[in-house]
Length: 248
Image (tube, rainbow, N blue to C red):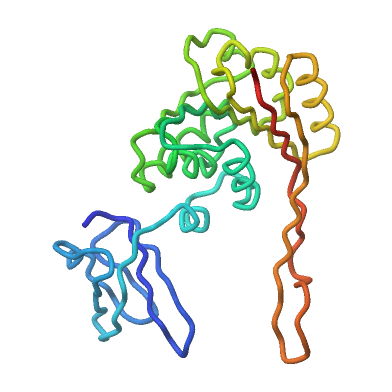
């Protein structure tokens, strides 16, 4: 079995988990785990620390990588990624063009479903971090390119089924989307600010898209206490605006 893995254990009715990325040993508060003992084991099997604590071996999924992957900034949240995946109908035969890779979280979610993801990142230091995270995810269908999407999209000779843009200059790339998107394909743009969302809508309206909608997804966690049940006050639900458009 290759790393990374998630090791979980129940302590006092609560689950503790440990993300094993690399190395011969994993030092935890419940003892040292010899990671070489993973050889020959399968997901769902157990492994013990030198103190006798028994951990269940679990395969990391995209939400685990969202928590444990190296960050370059604020990645797109799972709630927003879910909106993009569901509203574009992303499937296993799709080819995706993504821009604004960052730490690669969105690309990992997309690559877990699509046949291929081509993602562009303008900042070289972010490229290295994203490559490390893609290696952790074990996804070979993600191709990371270093470049400015507003320039690179003008020379692309590929076609895509879904295009996702998470860059401040998204509106500058939108006029060139028709030349690289398949008929019936979807464009999804993430905008952190009202002003940016407006620029995106204006660019889309000039480019011949249909079925255009911009939404804000508010997420509220529910808190269960002895006093009663109510929305939690510890988290802010707003993250950004998502514009979905279809090209015919």
